[in-house]
Image (cartoon, rainbow, N blue to C red):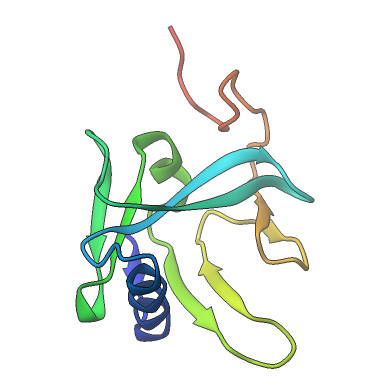
Length: 124
């Protein structure tokens, strides 16, 4: 599950409205890279893809997560920071063993990436 805090929900709804995608959502995924091993990636989408996990927060804000990324995002709390020093989405990810100062990359204990870039993924 991904919990969407009110601050993140407001920002999601605001940005979707700017793009005339009121019924859409924020896609959150992971890719290998960044300062610490994995990097959060974002996209605005009209609808979830088949097989996506869909989470709804306050004000109807929706987040879409693909099944592979969900392995390392399950239990995450998504917030949004509006301070003068930093501005952006904040992740409280229970799978992150360390995070980079940039806030968009993290590492996990098992850092042996699979061919598709996600740690611990089983492949035939």
